[in-house]
Amino acid sequence: MPDCRRALSYLASLFFLFAFWWFLATIINNPGLPGPLPSLQSLVEVWWPDLARHLCISTYRVLGSLALALITGVPLGLLAGRHPVLDSFLAPLVYLLYPVPKVALLPVAMVLLGIGDATRMLVIYLVIVNQILITTRDAARQIPPQLLLSVASLGAGKISLYRQVIIPACLPEIITAGRISLGSAISVLFISETIAGNSGVGYFILDGLFRADFGAMFAGIMAMAGMGLVLYMMLNLVEYLLCPWQRQ
Image (tube, rainbow, N blue to C red):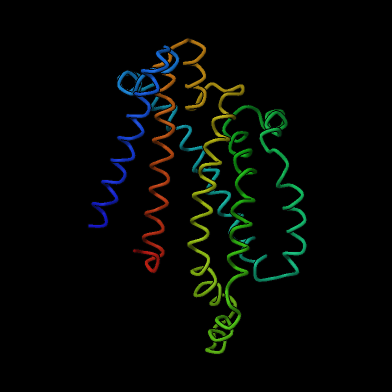
């Protein structure tokens, strides 16, 4: 029953979104804002192989950047949260670098790495790694010391404490950080693909704009939104499988 309710809520939200989109397109009556039905028709027309290829490239860039940010940000966050000395060193670096607009470093990355995937993934990584690191560190800080002492009194070593207590306790917050970072990653992805690029959904959307093919442009927007939705649902599935105590 909960799964049926969730599916119905998704369908209701989708219906509302398309109805509101249709209402705006009808009121504005401008070719730059086609309605949902013409956009869906354009999506079917341009999907294979052109848009599908760009979507695969964009998905690879987002997943690669997110994986790299998790691989580096989570361990550093766990260690900083449990070791004040390391945190006292990392925290000033994070707070100094976090406000810097990482997208502004895109031209520098292009000069150093060229205009390939590595440049775009690096910029996305720089944007989201701090979000993951800070969230993980704060989650590790909030673990009650009594819990760790009680497990240690049973003979658990440092590795066992991390594996059996600290990581499971922080896992829901880490996945939440992944969700938040996913939205940031897709936003930065769009910007990076519209600058000196020839691949990716961002490039496809901008190319449709330059050609005044607004149907193709909105097809790309819908494809990018669909990519974000699927990746978000994948993170929900990961949480469902790895955090059974979070299930409702």
